[in-house]
Image 1 (cartoon, rainbow, N blue to C red):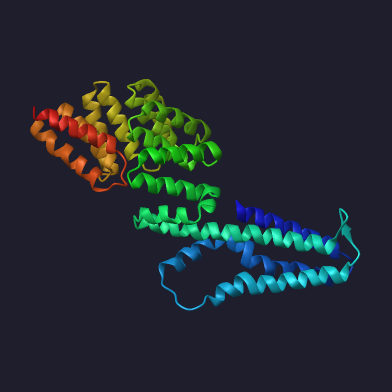
Image 2: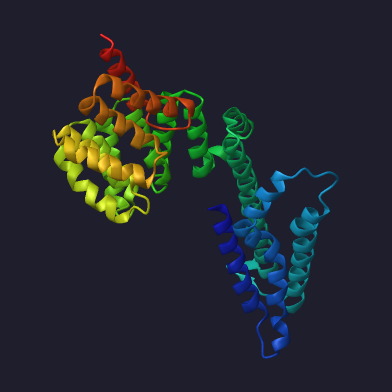
Length: 346
């Protein structure tokens, strides 16, 4: 967002400079490539440089970053000075809304650079946060948020990742409140809605999960995730007809529909169609045999269709896979399976 504002400000300044320096002598268009020199290491880097920054984070570096100083300060600073001198010499008496044209150009450059600096700070933090999450160093994300709380609060991506890290650290209620706050303050940022609906399913609140999932399905109709969440929440509420309605749309949109096919198997099981449930879960296993959700649904089917001796190892394997990775969802399903196994022993 900040990089976009910076780019718009600089684009406006380009147009303004062209207008201020326009005459029949095409040599005056020298201001255009000059602006490109100034903009390239700033606004364009704000849009495309995050990949290079993440790569730099992966390797250790020593000494002073002369390249960064050159690209961020020296080159654009020199270009800005030339632009300001050019405008002031060519049009010393021009005014815009009663202000000297030179002051207007300088002001626009300062505003653009301010937003670019803020954008670069946000992107640097986001690269550090994503790296910490990849390394499962979730406490590092929390520590970063405490060091620069205002920057985190202004960025939906940083807030989303902070809520994710909070969830992974085990405080799901706090994570839900953070997602809800983000959803309320920045409703256009839909990525957090998926995690929020999933979290409500995990904490045993399928009604709220379905409300959010329906909003996702309505606003992001071309995303399979929203329709799958509607089906899962409806199934949890034992509302099988809405689940059946959501499944075909999800199947049509999903590139890898293993979890969707597993949901179909679960719905068939709930309807008492055990034969179809066994058939569909076998299809889901072919698509993704390592899916934790597929394993959970397979265990549910086994507990209904197989003997306790056959069902127990299937359920125990599903529980072990889910519990082994705290980043894996479906902890609620694993808890239900543990209860079912305990009932087998009675």
